[in-house]
Image (cartoon, rainbow, N blue to C red; front, top):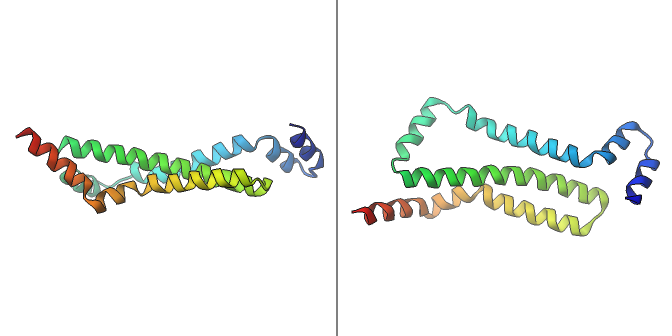
Length: 137
């Protein structure tokens, strides 16, 4: 806390004082804004996109898998923007432990974002839906 007080005393502008005293709130606001921009594509999907997706997803298991992967992607986008903010703050503060944690969080968020691509490339969704349809009959 004393370190923060010293930094605020050394600031020459009101903007710097505001940044040092409200950096967590600013990082959270930045994360929310970036997540809203990233998810706006979902809100404005065209009807042709919705029709093609509904034809592709014929089984309830396929719908569930796609919803789970979409949730993972949204969480990955939010974590990614938050980790970029943490990484910038740790570089500013010259905190090696913070850099390591932010980088780990960024890698995890990238895995969550591209998990749907990985599942589709490996054919895991087809495997799950075909296994659920053969187990019913």
